[in-house]
Image (tube, rainbow, N blue to C red; front, side, top):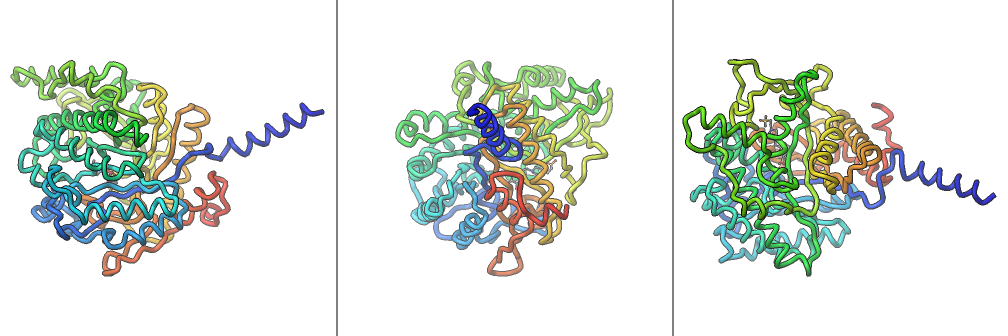
Length: 497
Ligand code: GBH
């Protein structure tokens, strides 16, 4: 009875491949970013980035007056980092290139030999260990010399960035096949210009952030077009942008419209221009800001418009989508006259919504961090619904803690619960998730939170000149997930949860 055998075999294959297994080819990785780990802020011919300048100029804006001057000292300890990545069995390591280390003038007239050597060494050893480099070209650290010319608010920044990206592609693109142009414009535009807690620290709510938003879309698009025209046929890599999106859930059924408006602001601003069929800003946001601007007596919208040509330039500039997920919020419409707190992500109060949290969302021991694993599945479904069946790489997901505990069971549970939701997303919702990256490989400089907030699978002892890295329980758990390519792991940590 061959058919019975065949049926039994295919059933068991399904049980092995479906269920708690990740699809073949699904990639597991971990991430970092240059300013957060490298240190060596003034070594060799490196120039100052806006984060070097910000941390040195406004120490009061960073917990413990911390800086990234030394950070994890990855500039010197890169071999240890790769050993760790190797111990975990990672398929890829996501890191970023420091613009000021590679191109100290900001412009391609001069390339630093030391900068070039550092990233070549890193990439080559990763490949030797069979770990794929996934490279972010820009992760918050603009050259200060370009900031002095207006930085992300100067429209020329799109060309400055594309010229930098060309250098990066030409130096490393023979070996790097997955590129992220910009990490989280929402952070370096909206948080930066609305509340000034991120470099460059200038506050211009509802104006600076929107100018920055537009320029990031053009910068990303120009870099993508450079790759397309000059490198793709030879290098055959993939290029996209990474956005950070909180899942925004309607507080009650009546708040669905408010929630959708908020999603169009938080996700749509940086996705609609690139990933939608129509291109340009999300229409609802464009309309609201235009109306508000008019009421304020402005003869134009505070949100700079795209020309038809710009819409076409930006539209379709992706080979996949990069997505960072951490947390969620509830959304409701503000009551008339209700005071809207400074929500860093919005142009002040432009969309008149109030954010909150549900009581049953467990809070990590960091103020902004509510844990809602279902949110990642809901967000992935929303992205598919909005922009179509695009491949998605989860470029960051991870849990914040304020204690250095080795036994980080909250983080272990966070990974497990989010990976479970991702499996549902793949198997039930048919979202094409290519891979998953933990933020972060190791504790590092967490921007305004300095070293007080930890995301690492490895603890880093920042009082020790050696910056000793020690694995936490989460490292052990993640290694076993990667190894079994599934959530069925023999792991005492999970048994104890
Ligand atoms: C990502 O940033 C970054 O890519 C990474 O560098 C960072 O270390 C990681 O996530 C963890 O934070 O003031 O309301 O915005 C996320 C940006 C900035 C989001 C701080 C949360 C605090 C709450 N994060 N922000 S709010």
